[in-house]
Length: 224
Length: 245
Image 1: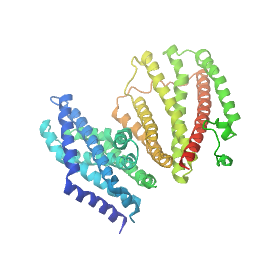
Image 2 (image 1 turned 180 degrees about the vertical axis):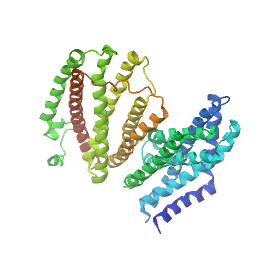
Image 3 (image 1 turned 90 degrees about the vertical axis):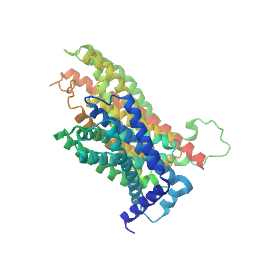
Image 4 (image 1 turned 30 degrees about the vertical axis):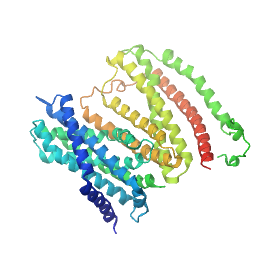
């Protein structure tokens, strides 16, 4: 089996499990909705300039969703020694990382696509650039999920378990978050500037850099 | 290292002075660095408070510069050492590199904490505010947060080999993240007020000399604290190996 084939198999395993249990999408989806609703009480989400607030609220919700989903996705591998099973399988470590990454990306991005229309309706937003909105959601999520999948594999073996994951991910994910908020705001207001292109490039560059670093270091994380 | 003492006899008392277990070779050198650090601190105080001329615009408040900037530079150096030691650990698996990374991260956090305390003290009289979300300040805060989380992670992993590898991964990812953080907050705060402090043309020679003395003193302090923490790390390694054995 090829490298990518193994990764696809692992991601497929997570997908089939999810289709049977609907654990992640249901719990994370509801959680995102709750964050958005709660944040709407906490922040001024009506009137002029609400696009900037909305972009921030949306990304706080997405970040929490990704953290919750990734912690869960690695926790199920600890049950019944699934992770050990994966590690002794002939699949290279890089493929295991890529498989978990694809699964995490898929779930988080699916939840985001479900919640975006609800969010737009609830906050009376006019989406000026739907394609840019989806693109920035994808690039931002890829960045968060890349460092998150790497750190989740570490966090699950610590005394803190899931509690430690946000502490590791949040400082590192700051550039991805800033870029995602900026591009999302541009998508909501329709004010595409030269800066927007720079932010997209920064987002993509962040993703590419940490994808390489994570693939290079993941074998060390799972070495026993 | 101290390979000759790896056969502990059964009748050793529970509390042993470290020297009884391993006569330490670097002890004299460490003391020398410690004394040199101690002696150099009054020199820096003299240089910063008396020798350097008073800043025409900022007045005496500017004198905090001679500890603020050296602490920041040596803090950066400390985190660079963490980065290099982390790569070396993953490449070789030698536990010694983990001791270096851990010691340097601890000292770096101490120094950068000093920067984050002296900065607002300087900012208040000069800028009128303790804190501003300027790129340099914001990314420095992020740098500090990354390495605090590094120390927290170390505390959460009891197994030594695993702790070494996990923290090495964070030491690498964290260091690579710093330039991107700086770039992104610079774009985010595109209206930033300019580098008020650093854009002066031609600092007077007395100021520059005092700054360099500050850097030298902080380097000595870094080396001394490093050697202390490395010694502690080595003793901890040995204790953990004995527990495991």
